[in-house]
Length: 292
Ligand code: AMP
Image (cartoon, rainbow, N blue to C red; front, side, top):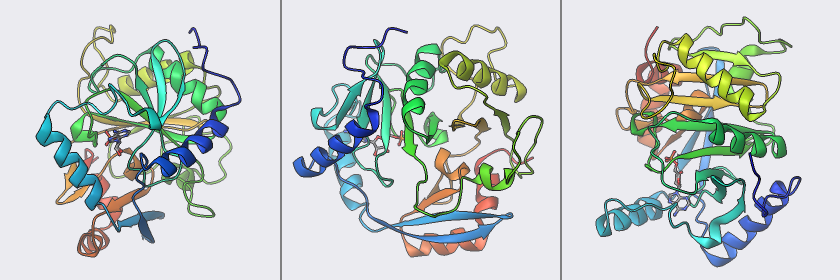
């Protein structure tokens, strides 16, 4: 991979902080305020956020879509949200409507569809960012997996997502197990997980394809070009990678993306929180995934 001139190793965290400040000052960054509750379900603790002001995001999105249904917020991107170049193919932006602080988007410079297989350039860009930030990375592969934009974008949020909050769902289940080799978490939905010893782009790509093949949703011809087989969520930290195939985008009005499978859900109001609590977050994941 040829890094771009603007990519300076060791600088991502500082740039992210400086650009966040700039985004807030210019009004380009519009964080979504939430409260949260901890909800126990399936032997783990979920963080359920309740939105205080989604209004301005949905109003802005509706306005954009009314103007142009093919509106692409990443091409061109808003300059005030630009964080850094990464490579010839990828750059980093701030998530304009962030719920979690310092939420990064890793987007392709040229248009690629969110429903195509991830490739080496995607994972090299992700690897650069994961080396700088110990975070939770994810990919919502298509609208059924929770993607709201068609232009290819991986995402990264620094850990912990909440100071002194619960660990990611998989880390809670893994407990103090030092090696995840051969470990299969007991979960009610289909998924595959592999430990990562290293997280260079090529390691990530190899593990990604291995996981998809384990779930029989890889490319049978091993070409990995064009569109993915079925929608899925990809979850990745420095320690492990996980793939979850999806059957539905939402459980009733409760939308779920990769963050849900990391134990972090978002609801728009207290009525939906009630529904979520009475069904149980783990049962919701089962319904939007593929029940075992
Ligand atoms: P997803 O919904 O998972 O596809 O992620 C896309 C993200 O892009 C959403 O979380 C939005 O908040 C974010 N977004 C929408 N418009 C913009 C924009 N103009 N610039 C940067 N991020 C945006």
